[in-house]
Structures are given as structure tokens and as C-alpha cells.
Image 1 (cartoon, rainbow, N blue to C red):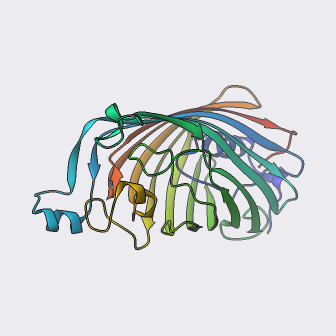
Image 2: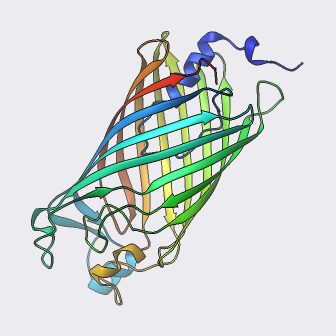
Length: 302
């Protein structure tokens, strides 16, 4: 027997909206749960990242004769970003999404070769995507499944510094999204993706896993793991690396995160996310804190 959206528990629909729609955009680019046609979400987020040490590579450790790939930074490397994210349902199977933002980075002295670059700011990379859901668990068996196709437009900032806002390349990305309701209070989701960018920036393979549960009527808790695996590229401190070639680094990131989501009203939700980089390559060991407020519009469900 198949289900329709009207047969879903209101509690379950609330769980999806609270757990999925307001998380700060530090962990995922897409969702297998789409807004109903003519409805959508707008989310405003503030994300702060800080690191006092940096993870280099095994190639650097072997070459330098070091005991560890972790090195201490001269000070705190910080990045503060304000994001605006949105989604809009075109049909039952199609949805648009976008992400724009602005950032400010800080590093004491800007590094030994760039003392005038201790504070950098600019527009972040902009993203837009189209998600096609080809399986919906409320009308067929198995999990919801979707493909997202996205475009990346490089932001307005300088590259080549340890505290640059990004790598500076245009590009494209594609990901497979899978989601499953668990009982009346839980959701599971997974994302596997590929990202390509111009200007000799290594490609990325992305894995994102998360699980959430609704506690009470309007409070959701979720945890997740995100892996970004860069393709072949340069390593810091290993020739032919130079600071100007920061965008060409092979950057690997392993991030654990948790989110508390609170449904404020029928159309607004608040989310607080904390993440910790637990490993990687050519990347700062950052602690990440995100705060978001999200609004749904159009009156449709997920």
C-alpha cells in the first residue's frame, strides 16, 4: 500500500522541517526532502571558525623529520561568515536552492610574508542548484532519493594567503542524496558528492552522514559526520608549494558536528550547530559554531 503526504504524522513533518531546514550551511549542500510546489525556506546564518593549530601531511612530516603532522600556528586563525540560503519547490520532484554570503578572516600579522593581510573580507563563493527527487518514500517503498546538480561562482576575495576566504575557482558539483524517516520522530540522511573547480583547484569527493530525532514537539537533536577528500594536489611545505599556490593544496577534512533545532512558530525555526575538525590534510583543526534562523513560506509541507 502506498502513502500520500496527508497520511504522514504532523509530528513527523515537524521533525523533518525542524531537523533539516535550519541547520547552518557548514555541513551540507542539499536534502532529499523537497519543499512542496510553490513553497520554500529562507535561512540566515552566522558561522564562526577558529583554529590554533594546522594539520599538514605525511609527506611533509617525513621530509621534515617531524614527530607529528600537527603544527602550532603563530596565533588564532579565524573566519566569520554570514550566509543566506534558500530553497524553492518547483514541483513534487524538483527544487531550486541558492547560497550567498560574506566573510571576514583574521590571522595575527597575516603570516611572516604578508603582514598587511591579517584581516581579509569579501563575498564568499555563491552556489545555486537544482535537486531532482526520483524516489519519494511517502509514495513508494524504500528511502527518498535525489540528485542535486549545482554551480559555483567564485567570490570576490584574494587567494594565496593562509587566511584567504576560499580557493577562488568557479565550478560545478553533483551529489546523490538519500533520506529515510525512522518511526515518528527520527530521520537519517546521507550525501555522496563530487565537486570540480577551475584554476588548478583539486576536485573533491564529499561524504555527509547525519541522524536526527525530535525531542518533545518542537526540539530536534542531530549529529553528523562530514568528510571532504581532495584529489591529488600540493602539500604545505613540500616543493613546489609556495603561498601563492594555496588553492592547489590537496585539502582533506573530517568534521564531526551536532545541532540543536528549535521550532519557534509554525513557520520559523532556530538552530545552533557545533562542529570540530578531528583530522585532515593541509587544513586548520577548526572548531566551528553556527547559529541560524529559518523561515518557511508558501504553506507547503516537506
